[in-house]
Image 1 (cartoon, helix red, strand yellow):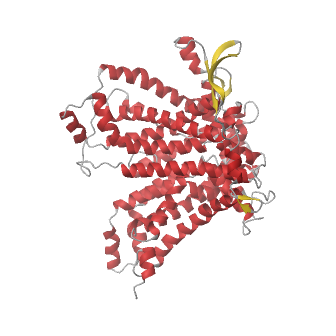
Image 2 (cartoon, helix red, strand yellow; image 1 turned 120 degrees about the vertical axis):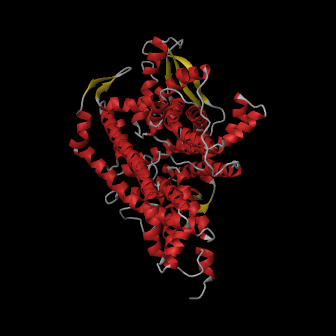
Image 3 (cartoon, one colour; image 1 turned 180 degrees about the vertical axis):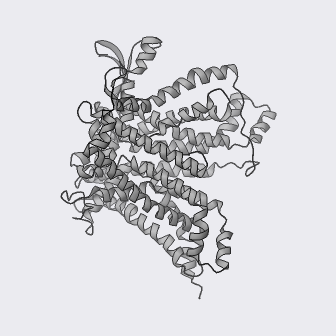
Amino acid sequence: MKVSKWSEKLFGTPLPDPVVIASFLFPLLYLIAFLVIPVIVMLGTAFEYNGHISLYWFKSIFSSSYYVNLHPDGYLVKTTIYGGQEVYHFSGWDFGVVLNSIIVSVSVMILTTLLGTFFAFIMARYEFPGKNIMRVLLFIPLLVTPFVNVVVVKKMFLPDGIINWIFYQHLHLLPKPIWIDGLVGVIIAQTITYYPIVYLNAYASFINIDPSLEEQAENLGSRGFHLFRTVTLPLAMPGIMAGAILVGIFSLEDLAAPIVFQGSAIAKKLMSYQIYSSFVSGFAVGNPQMAALALIMLTIALIMFLAVRWYVGLKQYAMLSKGGRWKPRVAKPKWWQALIIAFVAVPLLLITIFPQIGVVLLAFSKSWYGTWPTGFTLENMKAIITQPDIERVILNSLLYSTVAIVIIILLSLTASYASGRFKKAKLAPILDSLATIPIAVPGIVIAMSYFFFFSTVPPFKGTILDPTNLLYFFPGAALILAYSIRRLPFAARSISAGLQQVHVSLEEAAMNLGAGRWKALTSILLPMISLNLLGGAMLSFVYCMSETSVGITLGSINSTWYPITAKMRELIMGAVGSANLAAALGVFLMLVQITAIVIANIITKQRYSFIGLT
């Protein structure tokens, strides 16, 4: 067969191979169709004014004090009256929607970096009683319970909440009770939720540092904090920054905290909430200003993502023994270090895991007034299997997530195989970038782009994918597409790691013995990476089940087809007692996540890890 130059350039094979071509084209066309083109359609909407290309909508945002306010209103903290007593009320300055979002995101990045790195260094470098228990507890905040954990955080920091009960009433460490609300409340809630992401990335970085580098620095006289600042921290910084930027993106797109704290007007002045409110009010229909705001959010997220990719690539340090085996430097803490662990680390950890504990308590209680939930009951958990509307949303989410996972497996397998095995192909870096970039695209931006795409592009307008076609719109179809795009990087990363461990010579040997590429792929490669495939699929499934941004926007248009998160949002915003039912759904999600983690650990025989950007 004649050598084909176009095949060699585009696909990396001198002879056209249907399997290789399909492995490139299927994920590439899918991502272009349901990620790139919808964003381009939204881009066109945002840049159009009176039938012409214009920056009008962007100018209207940046010239409005509602969106950008360089002379902020509000206050960080002031003394006020709550329940007949003086309290310190923390709220936050109002710099406008765009600047508020950036300030919240940066603040959460800084706080989670400090907290996550602190815990990571302790766990990586010290051996102390109760370390294994602490290791397990550090995973608890990763259990996603949309909205309900934020409700618990809000209750924790009320004047009659558990924080004041401990530090004001009993320990007398506060001169007055504190009341955290507004943007400060959003920052605290997001910090507690996301710091384990930085912790896991930082922990992996610390234990992968070649001990000989620190030992050489010690031989040259470096000790203590100077050693940490000049050697240890720089070597771990790529992993820490990767986790921090991922947190920044998650903070930017988060909707749970702004919705729960929306009783404070300033908490509504975030980009994610503004776009969300345009959906629930019907204001999104043909509104180019919201399209422009979504693009501003997307631009900020992409800048953060590309910046850390550049930084991590720039700061890769070569370890002297890289590729070898070593034991991490672990020592018993000195007396003052033991005091810090006992009286700083442990209390901080207990505070950060209380939201998940509070979700369980709320699910099994009748009410929650004051410091603690009151009245034990099983009715909330029974409602999951006895109330038709709640049972239906669980089945909906299971259906959407299962179908999405099938698509994700096909996409991640073909994309990883094509870009990993045929790196010289012109399409390989493009495909690799498209398969990775969804992690930097906020879910609310996906929802907004789908809204404009499916409601304006002729092949989809008026179909079950058109959100403006209320009689026939089927949210499940849009959610499946959104899930398959947003959660693709989780599975793709896992499969890529598996491919790197299987040498290409094994496939070549099979092909030299007469097997076709399809036979070599299915009989040699797939069995060898099956554990990576399963692990990535289970992780993606967990995040599909708890997907919030798309679920409470596109997914909330038709109540018959609600996913779990849309129902939880409705319950949280509903009548007194509805939060208990939302907590019961939160417990169900936690059980799903724990089950997935345990199964993945047993099958893959490795510790559960969270996706980073390195």
